[in-house]
Amino acid sequence: LAQTRNRRFIHTGPHSQPAYPGHVPLTAFQNAFLAVGSALMALADPRRGDMVAALGETTAGSTLTRLRDIMLDSPEGRRILKERPRINSKTLNMDKLRELPDGTFGRAYIGWLDGCRVTPDSREPVHYISDPELAYVMQRYRETHDFYHALFSLRVSALPELALKAFEFTNLGFPMTAFALGAAVRLKPAQRERLWKEYVPWAMRCGSHGRCLLTVYWEERWAQDLKELQMELGVWNPP
Amino acid sequence: MQAASRAWRTTSRQSYRSAFVLRQNHQQAQPQNPQSPDSSGRTTSFGFRTVPEESKESLVKNVFDSVASNYDLMNDATSFGVHRLWKDTFVSTLRPGRKGPLRCIDVAGGTGDIALRILDHARETYADRETSVEVVDINAQMLKEGFTRFKKTMYHNTPQVSFHEANAQELPSSQFKDDTYDLYTIAFGIRNCTSIPAVLKEAYRVLKPGATFACLEFSKVNNPLLSTFYDQYSFTVIPLLGTILAGDRDSYQYLVESIRKFPSQPDFAQMIRDAGFTTGRDVDGGAWTDLWGGIASIHTGVKV
Image 1 (cartoon, rainbow over the protein chains, first blue to last red):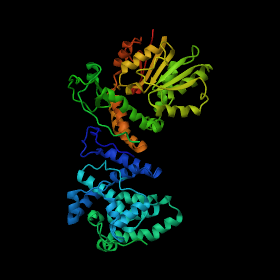
Image 2 (spheres, rainbow over the protein chains, first blue to last red; image 1 turned 180 degrees about the vertical axis):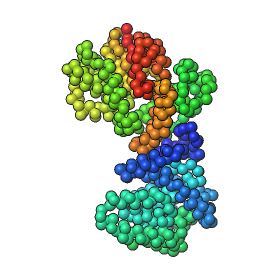
Image 3 (cartoon, rainbow over the protein chains, first blue to last red; image 1 turned 30 degrees about the vertical axis):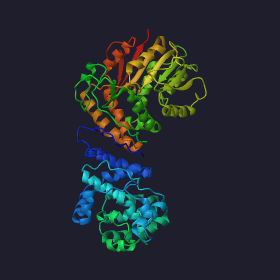
Image 4 (cartoon, rainbow over the protein chains, first blue to last red; image 1 turned 90 degrees about the vertical axis):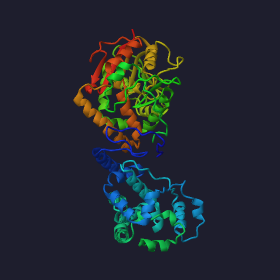
C-alpha cells in the first residue's frame, strides 16, 4: 500500500494536532474502535499489513513506555534513542552486506532477505502513537523484526512467524504478539502441535533469558559472528 | 488503495458567496478572513482544504479511483444501508415512466444505483421498457463498476442503459445535444464538482423544456441534537471505517469534509434558480425535501 508522504496532515478533530508526519491522533473511543476493527480485519484478510500494524499500535498501551525505559537503561539502547537509526533500502548498503564472510550476522541477514524475497521497505509507518519517541520505539520494533528472523534463521511462512511472535511476547511484551498466536487456528493440526510443543517452550525460555532485543544496535554488528552474537544476547536457535 | 501523494497549498479561502460562508456551522471552524485570491488563479475547497481550482478535479479523481472498488460496500457500512432508502425515495418521488417512456441522463452516476432504480421503477410500476438512462461519470473506474453491476441485470446490452465518460461541467455538445432529456438526475455527485453553477448550466442546456432536474445530496442538518450526533459519527467513525475496510483514511476524511462544505438547502435552491430552473418555495417540501432531518436532501427544478 503506497503511503501518502509530504503532505500537511489533515486535521481530524477538535482534539490534538499531529505530533509527527503521519500521525493520526485518536480519542480513546476511536482507539478502541480501531483496535477491534483492525483485529477483525487482520483476521479476515491477513494480507492487510496496515491492519496488523494498527492493531499493534492501538493495543500497545504501557508496553512502549516500559521498553523505552529499558532502552534508556542500556548504553546501546540510549544510543539508539538518541540517533534514531532507520532501516530501509536507502539506509542499508545491501552490496556491502553481501560481501561479508559467511557466518556473520550481516551475511545471514542479507541471505535471509534474498532467500525469502523480502525487502526492508515493506513496513508500515507508525500512525497512532501520540508520543514521538514512543512512536520511534514502535517503528524500530517493526523495522528490526526482520533481524530477529535472521538471528534465528526463521523463514516467513506461518509457523516460523508465529514462533517468532511467541518469542517477541516474552522478550518485548507487546499484547498484540499474544493475539497473533490466536491466528494459530489457521494452521494445520500437525503444525499447531509443533508450535505448542516445540516452538512456544523455546520462545518462553529463550525470550525471557535473553536480553531485550530492542537494546541491540544491529547496524554496528554486521561483521559479528552469528553464533557469538547469539551467545552475547543470551539466545539460541529454535528446534 | 491509498490516495497518491500530493501537496496541498493552503491559500486564502474563496467561497461562492460570502452569505453561505457565514452559514457554515461545521465543527472545525476555518479562520474567517476573506482575502482576495492571488491573481494566479481562483481557489476552491477540497474538503476543509483550499486548493487551486485546476487541482480539484484531479484530487477528486484520485479519491474516486481509490474508493471505486469498495464504493458500494463502504456506502452500506457507513450509512448502515440507509443510502438505499434514500435512493429508493429519490427515484419513487420522480415516478419515471408515469407519463410514458423517458430519456434520462444520470450524471456522476458511476456505479449505477440510480439508473438501475429508474429502469426498474419504469418496468415494474408502468410496464415501461422504453425508458432509457445514459449514465455519465467523469471517473472511468466508477463507470467500470457500474457496467459490471449492470451485466448482472436484464438491461445489459439493451438500448435502455449506456455508459459515458464525461465531465458534468462540460458535457460534449456533439454527444449531449441541447433540449434532449426528460429527466436529469445527479445523486451524491454534485458536491464533488469544482463548479456547481457550471453543472447546473449544463443540466439546463441538455434538458427539454418542461423536463425535471433532480439532485439527491447530503445537506445541512438543522436540528442541533441530531447535528451533534451526526458530526460526531461523521468525523469519528467514518474515517476509521475507511481505514479498516478500505485501507484509505484520507478519501473518507475528504468525503465527510466535502459534505460540510456544500451549500445549505435554500442556498442550493437559489443556485438552481440562477441556472434558469423554476423551483418550489424555499421551504422543506417546496424546492427541496429533507430526508432524515436534512442528512440528505432532494432538490428539484423544472426547465420552463
